[in-house]
Image (tube, rainbow, N blue to C red; front, side):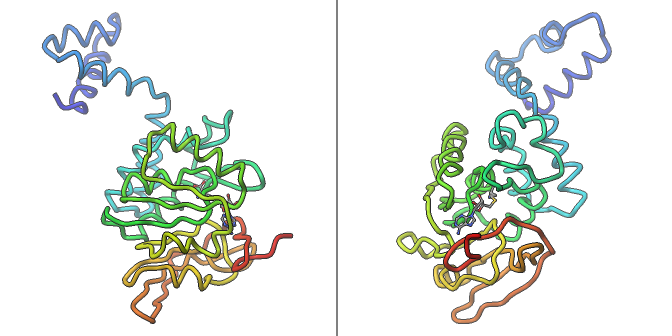
Length: 260
Ligand code: SAH
């Protein structure tokens, strides 16, 4: 039995009959549903943020032009509330970035969707992310691609992200603590590179470690405001397009901003 149909018909019956609980309605209305399906459905209904997550997609992402079905499905699956700072779960699906400690932020859902869409993923890529932060963007990528490599310079954030990524069950993510402005030479080349911190210019190391035909998505600008650069590598030629203006925390490192 299709889960969606089950949920829909359950709600429909429940509305019509206010004296019955959902479970009695379910057993009367659907006497022949295999137990396993009912149990799975009950578990999903126990995720208190399922509705908020669906609304994030229908109210924040779709109306603003996010179209890639892989991205939409991934963001529908990843439990963003498991990646925000403990105690802030009820803000996880709001249309804005949130503080994650150490002066850093988890990006707004729309910007995560936009950057992921701009990577133009087909599913078999090895992707490098600079700025693991909460681990949320890495989890969204892990839903779609073959393997995610992600570098974070603040050890505590990396460790916290590792816990969340493991708990969510992703086994195709490798984290590293270090200066991501230098890339990850031992694991290069990468089919895609995504930088989730604002850089003063595009680090040469990242251009070098990008595969031929690959895309690099990186915010470039000053410390207040940046342009989201979409860079495509074709041999020695790098083609650049600007997707949108954006505002990220600083990329701090040898090929980024110096530490203040
Ligand atoms: N992708 C993250 C957003 C992180 S915010 C998420 O989904 O939550 C940007 C992160 O980049 C911060 O955690 C910051 O510490 C990190 N960062 C800044 N400069 C860095 C560098 N040179 N190497 C690795 N990480 C860096």
